[in-house]
Image (cartoon, rainbow over all chains, first blue to last red; front, side):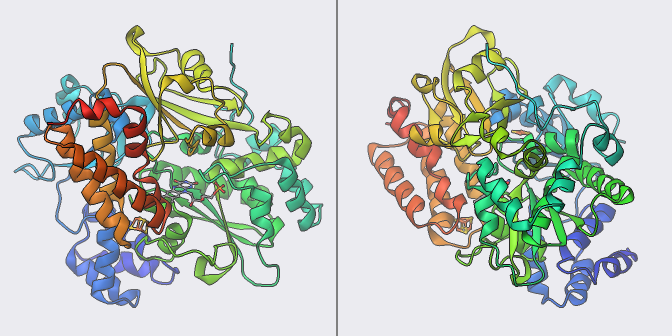
Amino acid sequence: MANYKEIIATYKDKPGGIIEAFHAIQKEFNYIPEEALREAAKAFGLSEAEAFGVATFYSYFSVKKRGKYIIRVCTSAPCMVAGGDKLLEALENYLGIKLGETTADGRFTLEATECVGQCQGTPVITINGKPIPEVTPERIPEILSSYK
Amino acid sequence: MAQEMRILLKHADQINPESAEDYIRVGGYKGLEKARGMDPRAVIEEVKRSGLRGRGGAGFNTGLKWSFVPQDIEPKFVICNLDEGEPGTYKDRIIVEKNAQAVLEGMAICGHAIGSKKGYIYCRGEYPHLVQLLNKAIASAKACGVLGDFDIEVRMGAGAYVCGDETALIESIEGHRGNPRFKPPFPGVAGLWGKPTVVNNVETFACLPYILVNGADWFAGIGAPNYPGTKILTLTGDVVNRTYVEVPTNVTLREVIYELGGGIRGGKKLKAVQVGGTSGAFISPEYLDTQIDFDSMASISATLGSGAIFAIDETRDIVEIVTRISRFFEHESCGQCTPCREGTFRTREIMERISSGKGSIQDLKNLELLGKVMKDTSLCGLGQAAPVPILTTLKNFGHEYKRKLI
Ligand SMILES: Cc1cc2nc3c(=O)[nH]c(=O)nc-3n(C[C@H](O)[C@H](O)[C@H](O)COP(=O)(O)O)c2cc1C
Ligand code: SF4
Ligand code: FES
């Protein structure tokens, strides 16, 4: 976990760049580790509380360790009426975890999200940001099998 | 038979949105060239005269908004709002995916009009592919020399609906939590880093090249006179065609749902339609012959909003759907002001109680009172709009609530 310092240094001089830095850190680690948060606070001249406040304001950022693949299920109304709730339940059953949890092997974290702007293909899930439209419970094993 | 009218999306899938050359081949950057040959004041006048009103939801006259920007303060900023968080909405993504260069051109036209050399595009965190696309599009436009000395930078949001509010968006670009600011001052006077800033929606910017090339009168003559032009709508829910369409603003909801949308799935009957996204009003079918333009929607106490059209069929439980929507607002409230923070929490709690069959008549009365207070006293549009789905369903579909009471 060395290179968060380099990442932060790249954004340090950009006005308001802390959010960009958090994006880059999270891309690397899948969450924002505490050391990185402290380093970012220093680099951007904020108190640790302020930096923490920024990181936790945005639902895309996580300050908790997460799995390798983050599955997010859209729970907004258009996806809900297209079967999103059943899909979420099926994912919980298939993975053997509840919403917000990570599988024991550290592979998958299951999260809920609001609309991800792919509503032509409701219900939608995303895996590490990649949208997958029109997901049915039956398709889950096949879809997840490509995430090793 | 109602038909699409494609202006912004005319060359969709025929040109590479990243390529300025492709765009120039179909007439692109002529609008900017023309604008740069005009006095900035005249450009503002032209845009004002076209009648273009903001496509981000508030429907404010774009030229008029630009005219409030003081001339003598430097620097000034142009911000393109690509935060698009309203559930059921993806039109701005489509515009960028199909015609990104028009958005850049529109921003540069605005830059010339208000005297700004720097633009930002604030792209929601859920659209990382658009950040890449836009960066390539900007590089391509720069390589062609068409943007001149106007610079555009893309910034990424991180999953906060409230950052779609222009002042929260500005806070976010500055690297802060996305808490909306108290207005006034408006961003046009004191926005990004306290400097004059114009924030417009993606679709608003994308209209500008066509207005400059074809003239204000041409644009003013399309669709509804009070809200001219085309509008890109996204159809979700129980319609046959869950798709997007670009239509003149004088089409009716009925035409959109039954002709372009192909009607309701499985031959069922329509129960309700929510226009403008999750913060919009639920309308009953008797109003289907209303035009979609901003003022016509307002005349039936609805909002065109982002142009999302969410149709639900007769078998749907509207109370359950509104309960879900109330959870959205509780989740997305920034927590800065009391009516919204506490109100979204309480309305969600009451909605869940009613939905699970444990609500009372008093709960309905409390919802109405609470909703009214939230509408009147919340600091930003989020808290003001949060009770709208509840209040409009209480009014138009009250029997569905009463059926569930103990
Ligand atoms: C909670 C909230 C969310 C908003 N979300 C968006 C959005 O996603 N996109 C947008 O363009 N405007 C959004 N707006 C409206 C903006 O504040 C602003 O009015 C708009 O970007 C101005 O552009 P326009 O005049 O071109 O419509 C939102 C407003 C509020 C209060
Ligand atoms: S209305 Fe809600 S979202 Fe807006 S400032 Fe108040 S708490 Fe924040
Ligand atoms: S409502 Fe689920 S992606 Fe838009």
